[in-house]
Structure formats: structure tokens, C-alpha cells
Image 1 (spheres, rainbow, N blue to C red):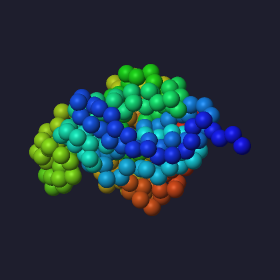
Image 2: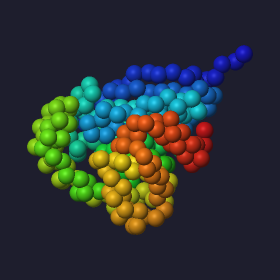
Image 3: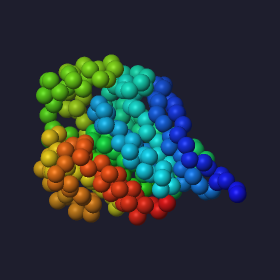
Length: 246
């Protein structure tokens, strides 16, 4: 029996962003032709990386890259919010160079603050055909760090203090023009009714301005969808397959 040209597996990967070594892993799907591919962007500081989504995507015929932003979880350099979009751009370029990737079917899956670089990068890249935001950050100015939270997050990152993190957050771009530029490509937001970080009110303005965004609310769930992970995984995978195939 002839085997597929591309075999399912998981490889550790590294690439460079602005001279810093970024590390991650690449879930490769079975197939004889280049496969649709997702890139996972974790949040701040990125404790939840949504790797159950990567496993399921591989099962249904998608490749999936996850990576760690500079200054986090073993990647080199100092963490900075400005560096997030640079690292995302580098990840996109790495994916596009892989033989088993169908360049016409690349999506970003962004958890929480990961939606910020996802939208900044995808707004200017034809190669990104869809975005999924999981408890996504949409309006940076609507969220205010407490000193305690900022110090806690900074303690899990390299080269940044809580005060620096709060200052960088206050300087983040408004996202409306990036969302507008990305649409009408498909954009899905999956949010939680009991989200203690970005509550449902965080999204109301964006939904009024951009009614074509697809929005799913899971009422009885927290920011990380802790009790409904199988549901979350299937919602994401089903939506991506519906939009970009398999």
C-alpha cells in the first residue's frame, strides 16, 4: 500500500524574528497534497496555548504551527507588545515556506491578547484567509491592568516589568481599522459569558460597527473555556473546514 507523501507528525521548530530565536512546534497532517494550515497565537502571558485545537486540526487534515512570542516560554529576547506582530509575521513567513502547506489556505487562531497581532498582521497580508479569535482582545483601551496582575504576568515573561507592561498596553493601537481592512474575509469570535477578563460588553461596540463578524457566545464558560474544551475545539475546526476546506 502506497503511503501518503506527507505523514502525520509533530516537529519542534525554530525561526528568527528581528534577530531573536522563536521556538514552537509544527503539527503535520497526513496527505498527498499541500494541506490547509493554521497558526496558533497564544495570549498574555500565554499559559493556555490551545494545543487541543492543534491536535484536532491535524486529525481532520490540517497542519498547525504553534510558537512562543519572544521573551516567553523559552523563546529568546525580551517580551514586548510591539514585538508580537513582528513575531506573527515571521511565523507566517515560516509557514509559507513549508512544502506541505497550501499557501492559499492559511488561517490564524488567536487566543485572548493573541488577537491583537493577528489582526495587525492579517490586515496587510493576502496570505491569511481567515481568523478565529478565542476570548479575543478587541478594544485594548477597555481593559485596565491592575498592578498585581501586571506584575504576575511580567513574572512569567523575560525582560519586562509590570510597570513596563502596563505602559506598553496603554500605547496599543485601536483595532477598528485593522478589522475593517481584514473583512470581508471570514472572522469568527468565540467569547465566554462568564469571562472575567474580557466580558461580553467588551465586544458590543465591534459587533455594532462590523455586523458581518461571526460571533458565538458560550454563556456558561470562563475566559479559557475550561469546562467546554471539546465543544470549543469542534466549533473552531468545523468553522475552519467550512470556510477553507480540508
